[in-house]
Image (cartoon, rainbow over all chains, first blue to last red; front, side, top):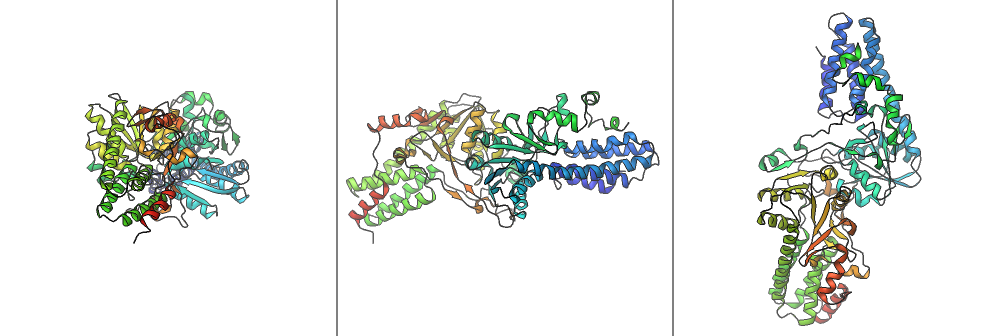
Length: 327
Length: 311
């Protein structure tokens, strides 16, 4: 029923071939667009809606913690409410998906503009993991002549720092990789920490790659400013009704090989992927709508993402009830 | 996958250096012995400049040689080894007394002091759980986890980045040291400073296990401890055949300073004391403070004067 092209994207997201919250979100929008284009089911709107919801659920289930993914799915699918015919529904989905992809790409550009302005001349920047938004902020500040050096953490276990390194090098930015254990050691040389976000909660806490919170703590200790570059679709509406952000534990094999794990049954290898940086360790969140204090996160949720408190209250968990969204 | 760069811990290096000194001394050629002492000193101060136990050993041996000659040197070094070994053991036992059965402990790297401490816990019948950081770049944490497993201690391994994530689950932090400075600052494995900071934030106590042989006498006179760094090679996983990004540049510090205010106590062979009280402890041991130590360079020229520049 679900076309192969959509399943391929879902698998790509699940296996982390497609990674980074922005890319995941755009891939999800793209997948929904493909699903709409390749629909071959019965020729009526109700069947199409059911099919699209199914595709949406498949995508949402691939990464339970990536808020950008359901935000993208909700953004696209809710347009189906206005459809009267199958053709209209199909067009609305395609249009919404294109729109999402375009604005999300522009979001990073805007963020890079606003974020780069915060960087003073002669700065040393530290970044953790790989975030397109953070890299674009740094690269822009570099192009504008204000960055002298970037420390990029290697980010065990998946080593996304290598991607950051290559990404920054492509822009000609002088970048030095450090092990994650060395962030406090180099922090006294650093002027700004710029990181991305996986999820921003309604109270301004930032859920991001494991290690981010101790980078922010080390920055606080050294009086180094911490900026989080986050597109608005990373703000989590569900946290507004008290939902906790689930921290995903990934396969221990990312840390040690199967053979070692089997040989040492007495050793438990835990691989949490994210941690929570409290808002008081963050100096500002840079979004496409401007620079804001983390505590003002709710502004984005209500004013920009269009989630009214009412709509959230009525749909206990919108991601699990996508049907309600399209009716 | 084994750690690809196995570095000796401070204590292991001490024992290795002592063993080599004994071997050379047994050959009975004072000139050659002096040359080896000087070589070892130069080697260690360039590759392991903060490895205080070994540097203090070399100094003690050089001083003994100048004061009382080559005679009886082997026994003297053997005595130092025994003394260090029992100091390490005593410090580990004292640290183990701080632990209450049922507690969870966090550590990093593969310090010999920590291994002795874990063994003491088992011998004291204290049931604990261990959380150990992987400890990049060398990944020595895997070795420590293996050791703890062999002692029957339930062990959890995590990446260095997850220290703050797991600190709330543990009760106390115990770490080894490479050196202790005059102000009570502790030089330990890279990442230990970050763990101490994270512990402070979470209000968990941090204990350092270190015999007084790790004290850096030079720091009394303002000398700074030098911390060695490695390059990008230390980050490459040889076995996985990882291909690195073009122009890969890395900075790999190997040790890090923990400020004294993040350390709740240092377990030494003389007991558990506040890091800031190290000078008081030393004054009581030596009967005077500051303790005057001859700079190693001065010792070298005196040795050369007396024994020649070797063959």
